[in-house]
Length: 401
Image (cartoon, rainbow, N blue to C red; front, side):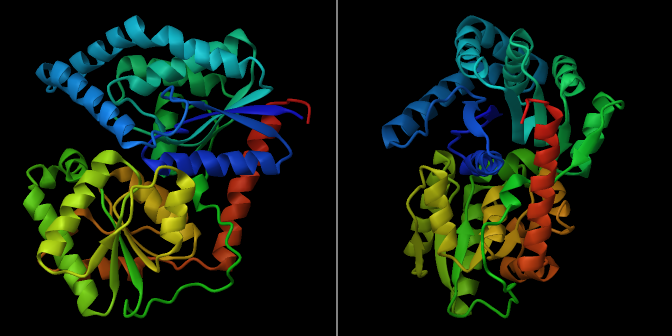
């Protein structure tokens, strides 16, 4: 049996990335291939325990303190990352990648937002993957990825080499396609839905939303720091303002007969924010429950499957809910969210200004009206598109199937 090495964020605590990995793994296996994962950040497993999460948080805080002096300079932040990478990480990571790729017949890089340049982290790691592929003469493809903006010159050079030498490149939306073409206009790029949209549901019925009375409404909470970082108008959003937003939403849901359930995508910082919101709501006598922090994608999928409606601030909480046939209200805070939903024909997500709205629930409900409800026919079309593009990518590697 031929073996594919899948390079992605396999063990991220943000389980949206793990959803991608799990779905692509499943699709590759359905083609009669074996598959083994390479975690792009070098993790070997999920961080399940609270002590592991605390250690990771402590390490992040130490690095944050070291680089706080450089916070206003992306160039200096990237210099610090580059030095740390060369001194502490490159050799071990490359050995890890070699140990897996040398026995593979082909390599799939993706999906997820990995062709990006947050402090140079991914370009450095992708460069190592690229070098190993070249050393062992392994064909590789880039599958259903997101492409970031604001790339440094170093990142542009690395990503240009990767997409230029790939056997096939697909991205998860128009914006990403445009960014790849800006890197190299000679590369043929195919647009493809995010793999997590692939639905294993056998339901024949779409959802026709008539209200939340008697329904379980999932409030998917992420850290307010994300809104402050990505949305200029929310740069000075306070934690109290954020909690009041969720209070307004939860009380409106309860007043309409819905049952509020708080959950997260697994990130420890998201869960800490969710706990603060939960405690705030309980202090105000709001009838709400909070689900445990999920430590792997199967647990998060089970949590989402127990809901009827999902208010999704994390993109893949909404995408997974959609693939499971739930009513989804996606909240945007980055262009990638509009891009990814637009790829399946949903051009409107709820804007981030809803966070400071006087009547946020009413504004969120407008998002329901803008959504095309997932039914058997739309799921079938999405499934065929994702599977077909993956077929083309695997065929392009000529691994002798």
